[in-house]
Image 1 (spheres, rainbow, N blue to C red):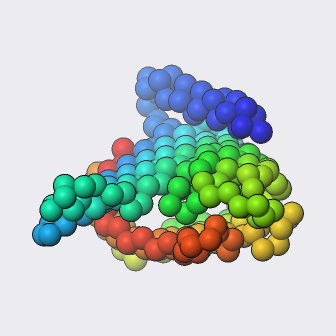
Image 2 (cartoon, rainbow, N blue to C red):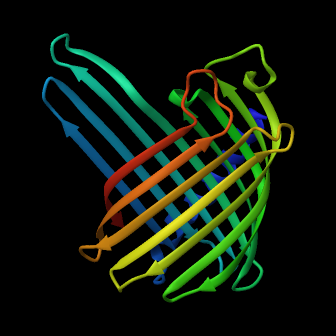
Length: 256
């Protein structure tokens, strides 16, 4: 499974990156890139620092074929000034690749694959590959609403292993449901809300829900300020680990 995902990741990276150089000579730009960066540092008896970064690359190969590649990282640590000791409190990494084919302006389907790690949530590694179909119910300019349904083959390794079925390293087939709504309040301000639901067909108690709410305010043609609130819920977790993570961030966004 891991070799299959690695091969798909490599193939999609090549497919996503190679057209960028070829299209430099073309007058019409066929790719966009959105980079987010946030950093918070507090000091006193203890010092806390949090770093988060995201990048989303979109490429339009043809009028019908589109690709996306996103990467994300989050790291937070506390430094005790009396002992000069550092302690990690959060660390998460992920990357995802998607290739979509547009049958019509509204209906599309595609393939996706990715990897993630969140050791503080008990997840050492997660690999997945799958297919999806999607439909755009609203296409703008003020409102965008789309939904997706899909199937993934997932492989998960856990940091905390119990002699129970639920917490052994395992691979399984999961269902995926995704929804995204965007509302352009003004020409420079946009609200977005997304929800993703993952369901393990082998174990109905193993499901995950991720919600992301964000407000993007443009301050120039390139830069924006983006406050966001993310909730990650995992129904089955190892003992003594919280089922819900909540993250507030305010990021500086650069669009190219």
